[in-house]
Length: 470
Image (tube, rainbow, N blue to C red):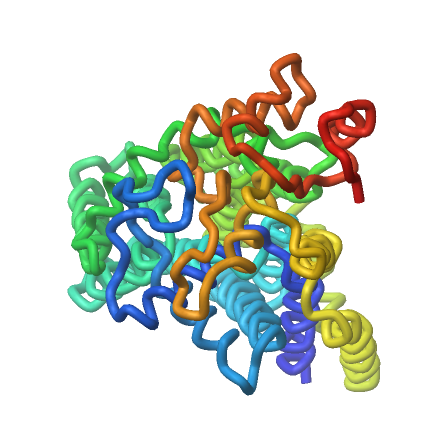
């Protein structure tokens, strides 16, 4: 019965972090997926951006894009197909995190608590997007690294590491994070001769796995070219520093605090290399909030590993460990009636969370569905001026059924495609600077799609250059 309760808690967390489909990047992913399905090949140059047409570009998330397009364009699924994909992705993510934490900690209660907490910390960054696949691969690599650390390295584990890396590399560019995490997890400064070989072998297996892509690992060049993007594109929310207003950042700090308390008491339960990794992930998450999920997962898995290495009941993890152990004993003492009541509560929560998703599978507050409908109904002229977030959806609405562009957008969510001079002109317009007209002039805009909350709308209301404002 307790196992059933755990399953329902996982489902509840997955539905809670899900939300309606509204990720801005999803729409250009859909278009590229359509193009790949219809042309049966991968693009080697950009086709969809007005200022980067013909520039070399790799569809490094092709596997996810093909899946999204196939599901969405089927007559059976449509928008609900995208919602189904998002819910299933959330379930796989939360279940993977919880299962790995349970296995690493050796405690169904404490592991589940860590797994659900780390998953919830990723809420603000979760969406139907390929980067979530990288989180799943990341947590499985950490679990595999701990198995190797405990039991020694075996050929099948190297194969598993390579397979995970292959899935990662065909979904997202961040596989280097997995390589770095496994190295700091396995390496031990007190036993360098014994541990560096295992670290190197696993890292090499992961590297080989990343070469098993249609581009034969050329994604590494794309990743290198995007290394500075978090700092060059700080107008994008996920590239901005985290603050205490971010629940995910608070969760990462809390997990790190628990880790430090445990490590201070049980000094041999965690290696200096692992602590170094925890500090680096914490710093990365606070500097660029896009890395909050990676940091939360690393801290949670490391806390789980420390829990398994020490006896909390005997005080080896200090008073905090004793407190968690008493909480675990309290949870274990729940009778059948209490467990059934908790399951019933989770069922009600799932129903309450799922109802608005079923009623409105797409998030119309973040996706410019109504404005684009209006533009088509009124047959408003092109070129169309759009901001960064709306670029993917504009691209999607004008694209043909086979993914070829019906209109090339000036700006979209692909930061390695957008022309630097166009981005700078866009920022001047976005922030209402003196040269706010530059973006309009570069695009030669006849129609503007813009959010009311930004200065441009107020500027246009005072300007005589535009005859109609809707």
